[in-house]
Amino acid sequence: MAGKSRQRGISFLTLVFILAVLGGAGAVVMQTLPSFLEYQAALKAINKAKTEATVAAVRSSFDRYAQVDDITSIRGKDLEVTKNGDQVVVSFAYQKEFHLFGPAWLLLKYAGTSHPGR
View (tube, rainbow, N blue to C red):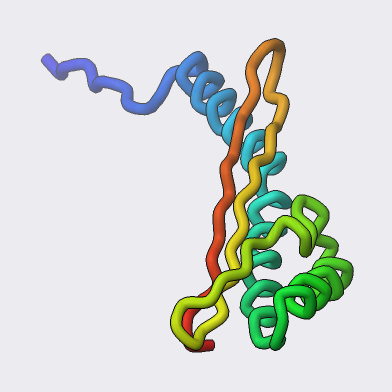
């Protein structure tokens, strides 16, 4: 007698569950991706602005770069400009909140420091 062959694969309910999880994760990524890209632009802007001679010049230079790159989360006045030896170090920190659903929120904390020697 020939034995029954066993079927392989996933059930419909498993497929629906997997698609729901992927859809939820995709929705969160779509909300947070612009914020991450803005953070990357802010890092690039502080690395360009740190070449200025004074603290006020660094902040105004950052504001010019922020206007071009559409950085709205921080301003030049929010930057912390210090000196480490003969190097200018520019840093910032901020947070963004995203409403997910009902009482659930996602909080992202961003912090960045300029690269030394560039």
